[in-house]
Image (cartoon, rainbow, N blue to C red; front, side, top):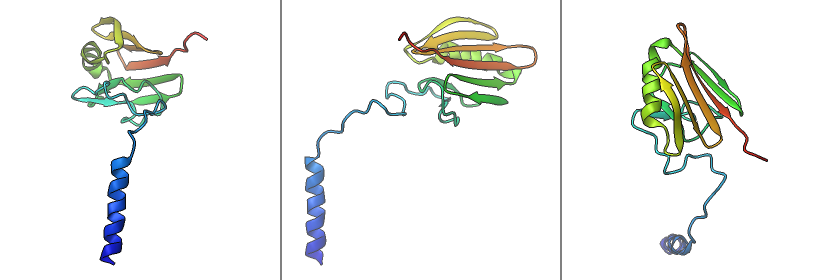
Length: 137
């Protein structure tokens, strides 16, 4: 019995040594390794969103009051007390290939890849909208 177990273990070890390099997957839903989440951040997937950009993160401490999760648009509403947190986050923590187009004390416009983002606040609520833009056909 020991010989059988030892032989099976040897075959497994040798098979593992001769395995080829893993192939790259282009359909992975995992964020790219170079799209590290900043300290204190959380991805939309970690927030249980099925849609939205995979490399964009938000502050972990935000309080979501309502949400829309569709393939072409993601919208999150927040209390107005979080306006500075969100604007500061977008100014400092957009992924490397994203651009901040404009910002003020209570608003930010940005884009990256096929996604455009807008964050704005009124006296009663704040909202973040991420809209998917199809590339040219």
